[in-house]
Length: 170
Image (tube, rainbow, N blue to C red; front, side, top):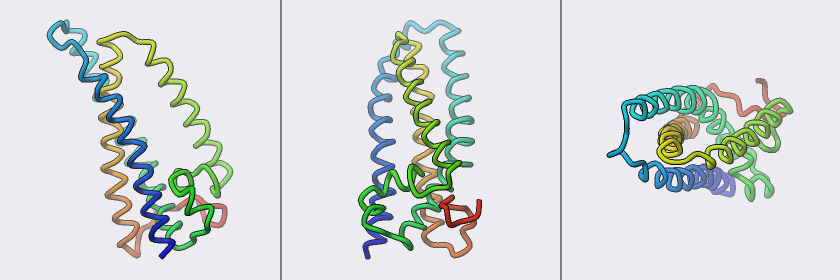
């Protein structure tokens, strides 16, 4: 029972984190002054949406993050400890009880994202809204792909993705 609760907390916690970012960045994206857009603003918006949809949504989330996190949710359900249950969202993201390479990549990626967030905050509208719209698209893709992979991980015996824990093959 604790494993089910921990897995649910891991999934919901990550979704809440992403949803919070979508809400905050979405409001910035909605503040874009679309009425005063020049052709190059529209081009930048289309390019940003295309790039972030592909790079963040498809490559980042759908091909990497979501399957691995779903595998870790499945692993957590079957191998729960009190600490993993308490910190399920950060466990599922790979911050601890992960292969050393995974931990390093996760921490570096997190620091890189924080740095980019700080840089994007310096942009003025409409540029900030354009970037934020792309991030909202990528994060939305991420939540959807995470939900689908988690459903597969918890219902299919042939789920083949590695949780990248120290005791699992890569």
